Length: 469
Image (cartoon, rainbow, N blue to C red; front, top):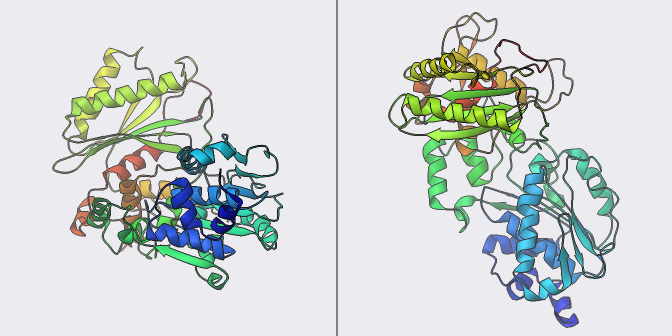
């Protein structure tokens, strides 16, 4: 057990608490955060990836629970994955790391509480997708922890401001600086004087590998928004010649996905490697959620086709698709270069086994093909425009619209989509740069991005059932 005298000391010395009671030595950046929360009412931390934010937030939850009488600690994040699989799992991990903490703190899936005081001495996890996530909390000692704060809507913060009128209250916000507006952005800009602000550059963190930093620099350059956000911990610049701004992509990544038992649409996209270091990427879209299924290097067209069939069969099984009720799955293949071989093999297999592969409908797609469109010059630009429109929060009339696309948190994908520039042609049409132009700028082939473009491309299919694809 921890003595009363020790608790009084640790209340103002969280670094020593973590070292002595939890049994781990914080690095210098984590120590800054710990001390800031101890001595400032509001702390806002922006950083790159992998600097140990989740661990330090978990330590702060435990420290505040043990060193304050009857505290309440509401914790929130934009998604269940971020809140429960990462932050809440960290809290459990560090409680188990200490014998003395295991004796006094009880961990459940949604609440950590002091033994014998479940309803009045606790930390609780609530995703920020609920409007009332942080409402109704009142205590002499209250600590709000908001993880990935850039992705949390402003309305979630409103009850926090009222609760912070209490002298013993605290607020800790942490996150990658992905958005150019909102509560978290303002805490590092126009409202900076009200906060203790901390900036952690991944290059200065002993927890961030040199390999990760070099990978981002080599792929996207030090002047890219991907480097600024994911390594340097700086807000994006979002240049005027970038077709899809990084903040749109980062917001999509951090949007909660609630799957349906029977989806409205399922699509598959495959960008086929041509040569050299290019990769074959197979992706799929289920309603608004997109995932990358496989990244293949050095595979022939037969192996690529087999992987697509494997994915399709898996999706049919997962969602119990019925040939008598459900529509086929559109499989869109990059038909340029060797991609034609994948198209041909899939069509042959479908013709030989129509009953088994009833779900398969193949669409060969050419990137960079000139199209007749009022605004867009070619097929690649049109596909980019489809993705951008799905990412926008408002329709053409300025009205809010539901989320239509949730992207995977993949560094290569986000970097490729956000790096692609555009120009206006002599005919006044928008044209995004092609792969060769990107490579001339020192960027890698946008294989992941092109696969996602294919997965999101709308096509007309032969109807079988009532579920519109």
